[in-house]
Structures are given as C-alpha cells and as structure tokens.
Amino acid sequence: MTLPDRPRNPVGGHVPVAGGLARVGLAWARDIGAETVQVFVANPRGWATPDGNPAQDELFRDRCAAEGLSAYIHAPYLINFGSHTPETAEKSVHSLRHSLRRGREIGAPGVVVHTGSATGGRPREVALAQVRERMLPLLDELHDDDPYLLLESTAGQGSSLCSLAEDFGPYFDALDAHPKLGICLDTCHIFAAGHDLAAPHGTHRTLDRLVETVGPGRLRLIHANDSKDVSGARKDRHMNIGAGHIGEEPFRELFSHPATEGVPLVIETPGGKEGHAADVALLKKLRDA
Image (tube, rainbow, N blue to C red; front, side, top):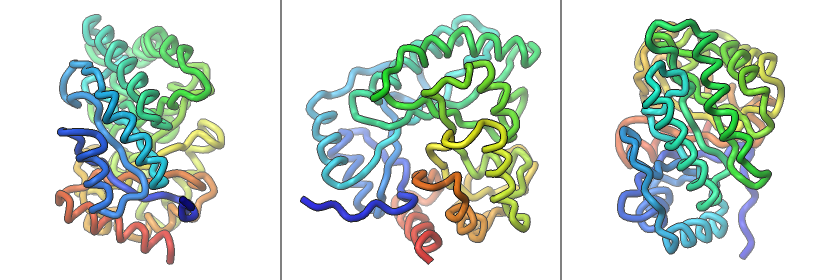
C-alpha cells in the first residue's frame, strides 16, 4: 500500500484509549481527521503502572504504520522530579520508566513529561540537582530506537522549574543535554508564562529564543492550544484554536519557522470529538494555505 506524502507538520489530537488502544484510540483519530495522536498509557492522575495488552499493542503499531500515523505518549501529571518528598520523587522514577517502556512497546517516537517544580521552598538549584539524580539514569537506559523524552514546560504557576523558553537551558544543563532529550512546546503554556505569541512576529521570536537556548533539532512535538487567559497570566486554561487570546495568526506563523520543520502538532482543546475535529481542520487549513 502506498501512503500519502507526509505533510510538513502532521496535525492530530490527544485521543481516548479506554477500551483499547487500537479499537478506541484509532477510531477517534479517524473521526477527527488526525495525522498524529497522543495517548495516555496509565491513569494521568495516578501512580498505577498497568501492563499493556500485547494484542492491542501490535494492532495499534500495525495500523499506525499502515495509516502513516505517529503516536506519542503523555506521562502522568503527578510526576515531579523536583519534589522535596522522597516518595513522590521515587514514584516519579517508576512512573516515567513505565511510560518509556510502554512507548517502546507501541512504537512511540516520544514520551512527554512535565518539567515539574521545586516544592517545599527549596532553591531551584537543589531541585535541578535532584532532577539530574533521578532522571539522567532513565535517559541513559534508552537505546537509539527507544522514544525520546520530551520535556513540557508549565504555564509558570508556583515554583515551576521550567516555564519560559530560557528555563530549558538550566534543565538541559542538569541532564547534560542528553541526546535522547527533546522538547514538547505547549503554545498555551508558553503564552501564559509570558511569551506573547500574539504580538507581531511573537511566535518566531519565541521559537528563535528556544533554539538559542537548547540548540536546533530539540523541538520534537507541539501541543497546539489557544489560551483562555492573556499572556503572562500564568494560568493553564486551554481554548480552541482561534477562540482565545493567541488567535489564529500565530499558529499560521508557527508553520513557517525552520525549527518546526517535520514537527507534529497535537491539540488538547475543549469540545470533545466535534471540537477536536474543528481544530484539526483549522490547523490543516492554516498549514496548507
């Protein structure tokens, strides 16, 4: 079977998989017109590390390959390698190792994890030292054909370790700029943290700053979400594309920056299947215009 040419930026969404990765997730993907998908492989708000279903894993891999889909994993939200609580730090190791293993099993090119925060009133330097201690061994366990670990910054709430583009610098330094380390850029998060994507050439300036900070080739996934709040509000509230304070034009601009060449976009927007289908269609329109 001949697959269609892969677009410069495949566009898709986070899809539900309860009931079967292939059976449920890929059906949803088709319904919204997805060219790429993101999934959870565990309860995103828990510490459980369930085994996969080998039959569903194989079917999912085969169908993704047949349909030209890439499939990313989002690790659970509770993971925080900067936590002052030993139990949280240890559970974070166990949970992320599980997500990386499941990524290998389903052929995911990347696993997204939030960069966390320095809890307990500790200095950032102490928290980053713990990030190094706990996360670097997980990166060293990865082989060439294993998923990349994709760091996702936050909207800047509390004592976040990484919210602005320049914050990725100390985080990468703590992890020796490991070759299996990449970035998942969330447009809502980076906008809320203070990078005004909606300003003239704001998207290009932000991407330039990111590349200056971590070097080329590190951006491997984009979470494409509009923002319910203004730039600098430090609130993580997603909106549908064009319906928030970012607007449509910055997403059009995003498609033209050299750093986004070949990088998939995944939406995490409200509105259920209908809302996702509309956002995927709009992003494709902006991409292909």
